[in-house]
Amino acid sequence: MYLRSKEHNPPHVHAITQDLDAPFLIATGEIIEGEFPPKAKALVQEFILKYQNELLEMWESGKYQKLPPLT
Image 1 (tube, rainbow, N blue to C red):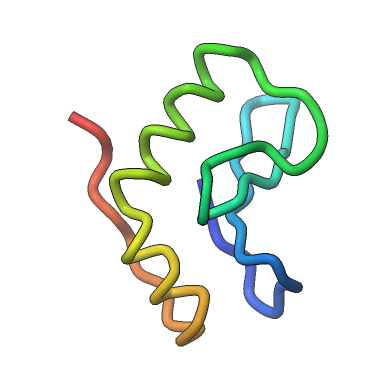
Image 2 (image 1 turned 180 degrees about the vertical axis):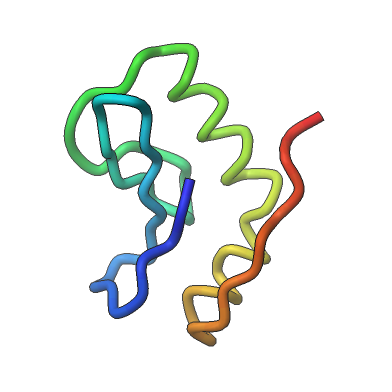
């Protein structure tokens, strides 16, 4: 999962797999467009909800940092 610089609103992150790249809303964890495998989608949503405040702060400040993985 990564945040791209110079993104457009609404605040979101892009999650990638070997073959897919999908944007997810930071506010809700919902996928904006495209398809994602159900298990991977659930993990991305769990990650977003766990780190929602940090992700929004990074979005607003443009200062990106690595976040710990889910445990």
